[in-house]
Image (cartoon, rainbow, N blue to C red):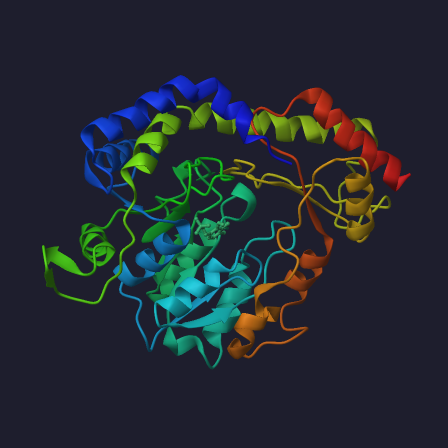
Length: 377
Ligand SMILES: Cc1ncc(COP(=O)(O)O)c(C=O)c1O
């Protein structure tokens, strides 16, 4: 599914030098290694401020808290994402409200969000938290209109979308604040847990820096109850090295996705339409957006049997995500049940992520597509 060692082999000298420099300077928490990475991020994404955090989950919580989301408010997000997209809202003390997805992109549906806003719970909503799932931006034209019209904060869950763009603007620069994850499997990855908040707002950045260090503006004087969500110096140094390569890696991912499209087309499996006769739906890039293919996700009603077949051929695949968030045991308290979000439920039963990473070879892709064609025939 993913071979991280191929990337490491190409970079190991640069990475060891960076790690060695942190050991020489003994700047293990925040400090210059993280500050240098934050400055480089601002330049690359076109944002005013970047705050290194200890994980993507912490970054999501920090983005919400710094943007002023607090108990008494509600935040709308998607039921089809990683658990943290909802748990961060609860950690911020707010109420999580879910809305269904657009089945053609798997991203939060703006129409479903507007239906919530027009309903009984609409008045309590302070923010919308769209997720740029699989590396493709949520429909930001619609969300920025909704945010403006209704006076709502927009918080991007950009954990899977480093380098993705909407109409030329980078993910991370679209909303009031955004959160990234540098979990080792992400497009831009640390050597452990790490994350980041980005924002164009000086006020959110200043509040975020305070909350990231236990609510301190002055050492040992605590203005608010924050948390410890600081990035390690080692992670900052490693990420600064990798940041110089991410554009090339994302281009390589795009080439891998194009190759999948071409191989499926050559196998006669690339018909358009939501339910083609052969039963396989391929992913696509929305016009005007730049997909960075964190995942290449196909869908088929025969997903589980296909996955078993691929496993029997020693071909990696993964299901992101098998259980939508409203049906998770831990989130029963949200008050939803089976049938609440039909598109998310259907997607959870049909999606299958295929191997995709910058160093994936064409001959390996041919094996994957060949096996899928054999299964479907
Ligand atoms: C969509 C999404 N949100 C949030 C997170 C949380 O990030 P982390 O694992 O770095 O805490 C992840 C990554 O796992 C994710 O994929």
